[in-house]
Length: 250
Ligand SMILES: Nc1ncnc2c1ncn2[C@@H]1O[C@H](COP(=O)(O)OP(=O)(O)O)[C@@H](O)[C@H]1O
Ligand SMILES: [Mg+2]
Figure 1 (cartoon, helix red, strand yellow):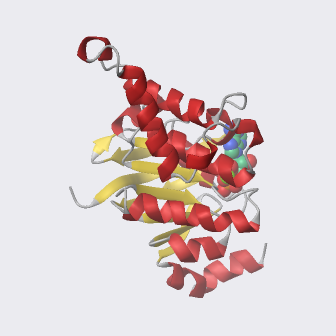
Figure 2: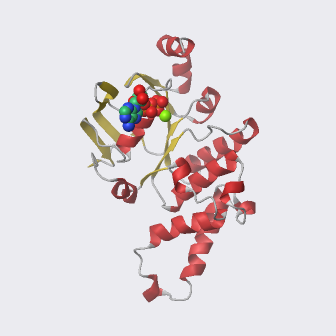
């Protein structure tokens, strides 16, 4: 492998006459944080939907670890190690933080024949793993709190915890700081760095807050009207005239 974990080739999605994603050639290097930025309606979420199998492309290809995953269903893509945080969908509000993470761990482990291996310790192992993930994501002291009572920032952490339960190689995050108060942004930024630096995950993140992008991203792709307008280091991107124009023009 070339060090490129995820790659798209002329990826295109039309909704009737509207081309939401147009000939996108994205290359994500393993072990990096790759940010996707761009104005509202640029096609960022649609690109995520194509990569994670939520939508089928009109044309073009998606490769994960050199395997063609174009048009494959989300559960299959996630079983290969490409997971996304599904925001509201993945959290059960009336369950505690620990129960939410436990369910995600159990979903991942459901195919393992624990009943044959160690019949009595299965439950304990699942709880142990869920506590480990709670601790990694900064939710250790909040495991007994109902998910619905969490602050917006802690809800985002829980989404990331649920994604981590599947032990993915790549995590795709769609605006992980959206709706989060200013003081809760820094812990999420730290968590994203930890995913890369300590857990050796690749992170693809759609993010609007430019200071967050500057702090965490190794590489930035700027989308505008369905296409990639510019790519580079965060510094190159903020200095790019074309990019400045679309942001100032907003
Ligand atoms: N399911 C859909 N059906 C029709 N149009 C859609 C659909 N999803 C997204 N779009 C349109 O595609 C464009 C890109 O949307 P989106 O990917 O959500 O942008 P972003 O995430 O960058 O804000 C927008 O014009 C949006 O209205
Ligand atoms: Mg979006």
